[in-house]
Length: 325
Ligand code: ADP
Ligand code: MG
Image 1 (cartoon, helix red, strand yellow):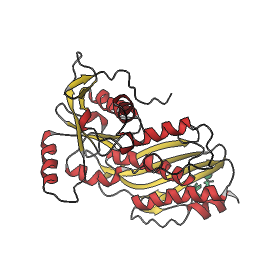
Image 2 (cartoon, protein in one colour):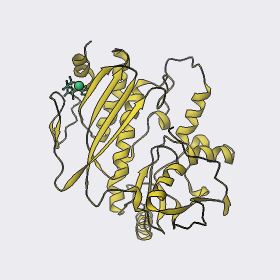
Image 3 (cartoon, rainbow, N blue to C red):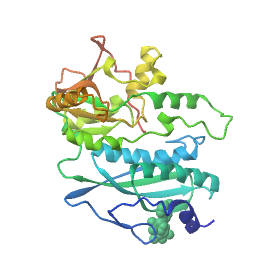
C-alpha cells in the first residue's frame, strides 16, 4: 500500500460536512472559512508512542485520544471546532492497526463534528501530530490569565481515574495481551466541547483543561493571573476507581494525576449564583459542575495553593504536578 492508497482508504470521505470547509483533503492546502466576526484559534499536540501512550494501547484508543486531547484544547479556549490536520508517522503500513486507529479518530470526529482537512503521512517511529482549528468571538475566549480574586474554582467532572490506570499499566511490565482492554477514563477521554456554549452563558473568562493534574494546571492559572487559591478536598469530585484508597494515595491521583481532560475554570460570584439557580430549576439540561475552591488575592505570606480537609490545612508540598521533562 502506498501513501495515497492509505490516505484514500482510511482518511478520506469521512463525510463530516461543515459549512466552513471550502476545500478539504486532496490539494496542496485545505481552505476553510471563519464564522463572521470570529477569529481563528489554533493548537497542536504530538502523541508519541512510549511517551504519551503505551505500545499495548488499542489503536482505536490511540486514534481517539490523539484527537481528543486537541479538541479538549479548543474547549478550554471556548472555541468552536472547525477542522483538523493529521501528521502521521508509522513504522509500517499495517492494515489492522491503521483501520482501528482511523476508526477511533473518525468516531470522535463525528461526535464533535470536526472535519479532517488534510495532513501528511510518513514512515517512521509511531507518532501522531494533530493540529486543530477553531473559532471564537474575540473577547469571549477563555484565558488562563483572567482569574479574579473571589472567583469560584470549578471543575467539570471526576479526577484521578486515568492516573490510577496509568500506574497499574506501568507496574505490569510484560503484558500477556497484544492490546490492553480499553478503559474509558484513560483511553477514551471525553473532550468537554459539549460545555462550551453553557460556559459562555455563564460568562466564563478563565479556563483550561486538566491534562497534567489539578495542582499543576491550577498553578498555571494562578501564575498567569498572579493570584493564589484555596481548595476544599471534600468538594473535589473523585473517580470511582480511587474512592476507596487511603487519603495520601487518593490525593496523589486526584490532585496530581493527569490525563482526565475535564475543564478547570472560574466563575464570578454572580455567575456562580446564576448557575445554582439554574441547577435548582431541576432542568435536566443543566450540566453538573463542581465548586472546588476560591481564587485569592496574591499574598506573599500564602502558599500558592492551600488545601483544606475537614476544615484543616493540609501540607501538599510533596504532591507535585506532572512534568514533561
Ligand atoms: P504534499 O505533497 O502536497 O505534501 P501529500 O502527498 O503529502 O501532499 O498529501 C496529499 C493530500 O493528502 C494533501 O491534501 C494532504 O493534506 C492529504 N493527506 C496526507 N496525509 C494525510 C493524512 N494522514 N490524513 C489526512 N490527509 C492527508
Ligand atoms: Mg505531504
